[in-house]
Length: 82
Image (cartoon, rainbow, N blue to C red):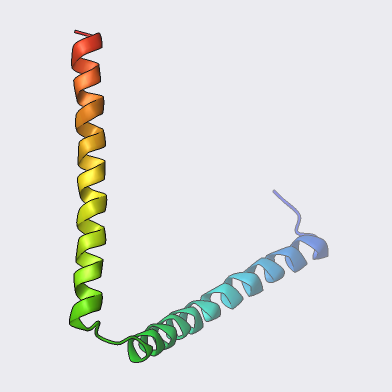
C-alpha cells in the first residue's frame, strides 16, 4: 500500500493544472490560426494575366528540368548497372 505524501499530491495538482492550461490553449491556437488565415486571404489578390502566364512558364520549366534530370539518372542506371 503506497503512502501519499504532500509532495506527490502537489505534483499531481501541478500536472493536472498543466494539462488544463494546455487544453485551454488549444482553442485559442485554433482561433488564432483561423484569424491569420482569413487575414492572408483578404490581403492576397488574383494575379493578372501577365503574372499568371509567368507563373505557369516558371512552373512548367521547373517540372521539365526535374523530369529531364530523372530521365538522365534512369538512363545512367540502366546503362551502368544492367
